[in-house]
Amino acid sequence: MKQARMLAIAAAVLGLGLLPLALTSKYLLHLVIMAAIFAILTMGLNLIYGYVGQLSLGHTAFFGIGAYTSALLALRLQMGFGWTLLSAAIAAGAAGIFIGHITLRLREAYFVIVTLSFSEIIYLVAVNWVDFTGGPMGLPDVPSPAGRLPGIGAWEITSKVSYYYLVMAVLLPLALIVYRMVRSPVGTAFVALRENEDLATSVGIGAYRYAMIAFVTGAIFAGLGGSLYAHYVGFISPEVFTFHYMIIMLVMAIMGGLGTISGPIVGSILFTLIPEYLRVAEKLREPIFGAILMVSIIFMPQGIVPLVGRLWRALRRRPLETR
Amino acid sequence: MLAEILQQVINGLIIGSTYALAAVGLTMIFGMMHIVNFTHGEFYMLGGFFAYQLAAFLHLNYYLSVASAVMAVMAVGFVCERVLLAPLRGKSIDTTVLVTIGLSIFLQNLALLWWGPTPKSIPLPFSNMPLRWGPVVLTWSRVLAVTVTFALIVLVHVLIRKSLLGKAMRATFQEKDSARLAGVDVERIYALTFTMGSGLAAAAGALLGSIFLIYPAMGNMAILKAFIVVILGGMGNFLGAIFGGLILGVTEGLGAGFVSSGYKDAIGFVLVILILMFKPSGLLGKGRRL
Image (cartoon, rainbow over all chains, first blue to last red; front, side, top):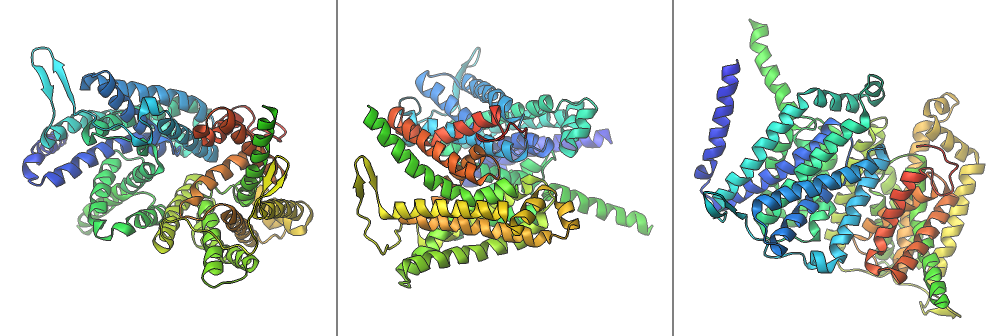
């Protein structure tokens, strides 16, 4: 059993490694890169919303903070990519501690509204602090990832294929962190808080402490995603803080499967690809997204991954029963 | 300096009463019913557009247009409550948040497809020339909006506090099961209150749409301000909503005049964060914890 799992993991890694060779279309590769960046963002949102059960509408704040930190450091101080990525994570994590400290004492509606308030405030700062952030015009010409390594010398990532490997090199360790975290006692505490906070607190699980762990980890993920996004797209504007991205992340997380490890990844792939195919009906894209959000919450609140899992188990059980 | 402050305060009071108007319906739906209704901004927007459609295309009388728009949005609200929200009763609050966000995106983009992005203005039956009284500058549409705001808020306050229906409403949202035991038709109260709240949002949209302009995204800022006002005034407190609206308007006016107009919209968010940190029962509240 353990060997089979190791084999499956090895096959998956090999498959991911060979994927760019199979994708002959540059456009498809671009979509895969975007899906991977969104998967990083959504995995973070899934920690606080899917596992701890606190609906944060401020996740775009951390995405934007990561993107702006990276872009500003690369443009103003010519920092190498390693440092901008690290700084984006630190900046988003610090903002997560600050915002979490204030919001995680609140519950339900108040948590939702105050997290939203924070992302609106940061949006207004990005729009109005023109000297620092470039204002509504944003920051053009964010350099592609480059740096200097001892022994190797200067390097720069310019092709889509190498960017793909870079994004994977961030996504896979983060997925492993999520996997280890949710299967540890910390993850059990998350779920306990989601299912019954009073009961969890009464057996000594500190709600604030564990919610903070999930919130700040999620913020760091979003910061990393923001940094990858800024260097990849090469242009950012205050738009990164808008509710539009929040909706996309929510749809991905919910449709994929809240509180599952692979849900956010599946959701990110699906909802990066589906809108591209909806391009035929460009004007109907947004209303369709709204309708999907509504319908999925009402009819499929568990998302695709648990649904597929149930189907799979049902199919496997049948032959046993007939025997 | 003093004249300038006075001017900012007066501007703030006028803007603040429009905030209060936008918030009355939400005080019902969010403050009393505890439904975090993100579609409220879209009811507000639809109120404006329906009134515009009736007045500009069917050449209906202005007041009749506004009244019919309110009725139409009440019908929309009623359907939303019955079809989308009633089945979610008792589920966690995130569910309603997400469903109403989805509905709001859906309606807002339908409005965008139907009416286009260009701002529209409702044709008015009276001239909108400014009236001057010393430092105060007013227009008829503003006088009308402010008057209707206060009339509506007082009316709703009396309805909730004094009438039997109001008593049933308060009972339902405080202790649903006991209310049902006492013979209150809880489902009807839910539908009725939500419908009334939607109608109030539409009234606000139509009246404020007569002062400003009407466009599909007009509900986005309105709903955020309305949430801020409801929290500032205290949940479900209608007189508090007037107070919260005025406080928000005046603080924004002073902030825009003396700090920076770009950060004007941030002031409300900062106020809400401070209120929830230090006095979660609202400015007028009696220190009750959340």
